[in-house]
Structures are given as C-alpha cells and as structure tokens.
Length: 196
Image (cartoon, rainbow, N blue to C red):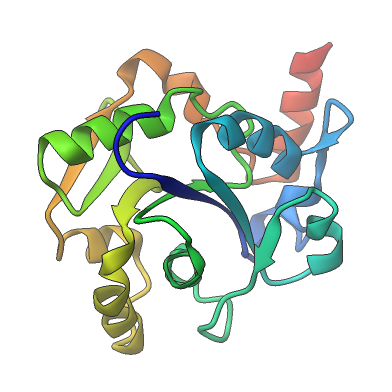
C-alpha cells in the first residue's frame, strides 16, 4: 500500500427499515453474515478496520474488529458513522463502505487514494456511470471539525456535506456490479438464488 495509512470503517449503524427492521449486516448470504463478506473484501485494503454499529454490538464484536457506535443520537445516518470513525481512527485517512455491499471492489481504496492524492482533494468517492456512490468514500481524518459542525447544524445527507469540500468522484464504470447492495428481504432472496 502506498501513501498514507488508512483506517477502514464498515457502516452498519442503520435501523434496517427497508429490511423490515432486521440488522442488515447480520443477514446471511452463502452461510455468512453480509458484514463478514464485506470485511473479507475490505480488510486487505486498509491498515485498521472498525465497524460502526448501534445495535447488536456483541454480535459484531465476534468478527474481530473494534465496534464503534454513533456519538450523535437518533440513528443520524452514514454521516454519523463517518463522524465517529474520524473520531476513532488511528490513521490520517478514513475509508467507508456500507455493510450491505458484499461484492465491493478489491481495489476500491487504492483507486480512491490515488485520486485523492492526485487531485489534492479532501475526499474521494466512487461513482458508477452517472450514479454517485457516496457511502464508498475516502477522506482525511482532519475533516472531523467540519463534519461535527455540519451534523450539529442538522445536516444528515452525505452528498450535501461533500459539496462543502474539495471532493473528487472516481469512476468505477468497469465494476458497476460490485456496488450492488442488499437493502430489502427481496434483494437478499435474489442474491441467495444467485448462489445456486
């Protein structure tokens, strides 16, 4: 790995509303929890790995990573997960991926980091064709004060915060399917059928 060291965080802090209230990261695919699939693809790309989870902490700890809960109350969304990651990270760069994307690219962090450095940006995020993928990002830990201010002001949308930064989008048109996520029970059923 070249450049600065990276802390990775798997975002598993949501309420799973579209999954009928089930904890998405713990749903099984091919006999393994979704978060385990993500971990296996993400861990080799980073120097430290954290899981952001607001429920089922003990279960998430069984995957061998430090588990961190949001510091902003009320399930404030992925930005709250990024906020606690920036607060907890040991390294100057922080990469995020959602817990429901078991097929994420094996070169995600390398490509985001190359674009971040090349453009002297504060944040790099993935894009597939015209679709931004804001939960797949790499940013500088030093952005913590700006993110705290944004959240304290009521901001919750990743895309809105990104607009306040020097951000760069990185094309992953060659791996569009890698960003498929599993939000609903029907999508999980379809993914399971795809195993057969």
